[in-house]
Amino acid sequence: MSALISIKNLTRVFDVSKPWLNRVLERRDKAYLTAVSDVSFDVEDKTVYALVGESGSGKSTIGKIVVGLLPASDGNVEIDGVDLATETDPAKVAEVRAEVQMIFQDPYASLNPRWRVREIINEPVAARGGKTEGLAEKLLEQVGLSAQDAGKFPHEFSGGQRQRICIARALASNPRIIVCDEPTSALDVSVQSQVLNLMSDLQEEMGLTYLFISHDLTVVHHMADVIGVLYLGRLVEEAPRDRLFSDPKHPYTQMLFDAAPRMDGFGREVDPPKGEIPDPINPPSGCAFHPRCPLAVDRCKKERPEMRKIGDTRVACHLAE
Amino acid sequence: MTDTAPPIPPTPERAPSRLARAWQSDFLYSFRRAPVAVVSFCVVLTLVLCAVFAPLIAPHDPFDPATLNLMNGFTPPGEANAFTGDSFLLGTDDQGRDVFSTILYGMRISLFVGFSAVLLAMVLGVVLGLLAGYSGGWTETIIMRVADVQLTFPAILVAMLIFGIAKGITPPEYRDQMAIWVLILAIGLSDWVQFARVVRGATLVEKNKEYVQAARLVGRSPLSIMLRHILPNVLNPVLVIATISLALAIIAEATLSFLGVGAPPTKPSLGTLIRIGQEFMFSGEWWILVFPAATLLALALSINLLGDWLRDALNPKLR
Image (tube, rainbow over all chains, first blue to last red; front, top):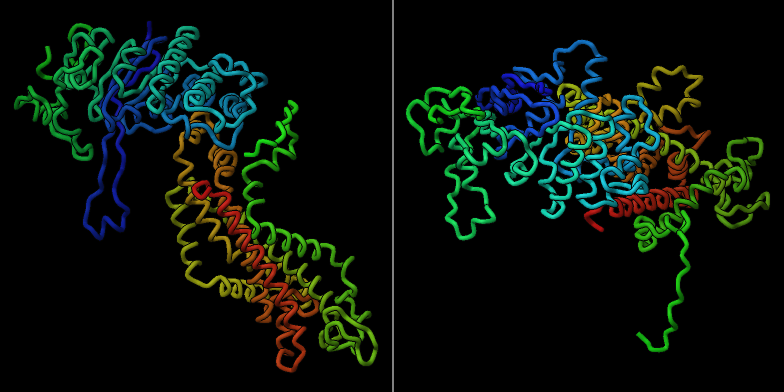
């Protein structure tokens, strides 16, 4: 198998400075927020790669860079060997873009309320001047809705149904990669599993590759083949699903698992995560996790840990073994 | 509640017609439930129809000097003229023009100027507002600062300025012909700011929604996203402002004409008629002033009330 998505040293910095006049009057410097810092990973073809992390850990930013909604500040993203940011052949860019689609978090905001479902689903194909006849109807049935729904407006559907429409839209241009940005976090738990099962089935049937972004460990356990854990814009650990769940190496991953509620854990002492995610404008020196880490030693404050390979796990921690 | 109520007959399974569905829609339901809106709508509709069909309704053509008889001047409403024996529904002015007819024709000009000016302001404001909201950065700064500066001047002053400049550069022989178009330009240019501000605000909200990102993702151009995705979603407030602006534009036109810089006396608008009328106000010929003024009042008030209702009806928070 070869890597379909290859991300190398990806960094994204946002300028969060106040307007020029305020900076001059209040004598402040420009402020930069590093949302993603030096992240590298590969996603194999026809697999599900999940990115997990707290809010503000940069997981959505990575998703947006992969699909091309945001430019990277540094590093690059190659999809099928093509770097969209530097590729100059517009035909090739269009071709690769058609292969990457996205499912968004909020099914209430991701469908244009003034458009009929048919137009919404056909849009990715229509935008390229492709043939759309009967496409929406076929896709609607594929995602478990009826062909008659094509003439309706989004407000006539429930959250789960809307997310199905979003999936149908993502499938319209026959993509190979779908970036799923917390696709079920806005849904009821009962509907979540239906949507997730649909996505799993489609992935197997159509041989899709998912970059699955989530903060929900149970969802990730259900979906992912490989999991990457993000902390403050840095990839701290990456491992195949079962390996990560059975043997988490990074203290942050261990803390996440300890904090997650468990079905068998009623009455168990929950060890709440200590401290808060630090200010990304002013991140801690060395290992970003050291202020919250129970194992931190002096070295962690000074030296940023490199990704190390231990078995089939990659981990960025000085002490992990 | 009564026992004698007849059993409800089974309703035949039939899809309601398009008209019936429109009648049942929220929008028209709230319209039917608002008597003020219904009355205002009827008044506006009547006045607009009167203006459109003025040549058919008006007993005289006030623009044709050949049909005027100076002897008919200052005939009071409803009375026969002392010299000619002609009688006029709303009386005549100093030149013997039938006030009723001049009002109908004047309203035509007022409404035409009002509609055209609002259309101009709307197109200009929506385009600039979308552009400012969607592109951000320097484009936004420049457009919105110009808008802010223009807002610090009263709209009527801006309109007079534009009117003065336009008058200065048009050759004198075309001035009367051009007056209407210059009016439209002046009022339209003085009124775009409101549209631009509202559209920019709405665009800022919409452009961060995920459906816009989805459209960017599939490679739609910014122009296509602005027009096909964002514009339909920012039109509700535009409709409300357009209605209220229509009333304001008609009043602005009347004000300019009243000040003598608007429609020429040969082609009088309601404002021109009021200006002519006020000269005779204190000499007893009240009808020359009162009837055009009352028409203007009824028109502007009804449009405003209709706009108020529209704002409430389209605001989901007030439903």
